[in-house]
Amino acid sequence: MLQHSRVHHDQRSVREFACQHEGCHYLARSATDARRHLVSHTSERNFACSEPGCDYRGKSLAQLRREFSPQYQ
Image (cartoon, rainbow, N blue to C red):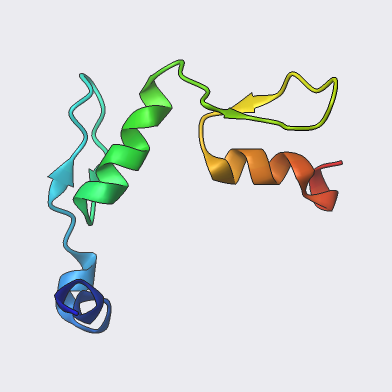
């Protein structure tokens, strides 16, 4: 509930979780957002397309879903 209440109060603009990657100045509102962002600095692509013959791999589930989105076809 505390996490959700931040959405409705002045704290929502507070970004207190800094990216630990050297040279990056990204600030996140939550530790989860900071961890999700940190993947952008790696070469890991853990989300594979399940379509036969497709080699696409994404860094996030959102990237993989965009692969199937009609607007990107």
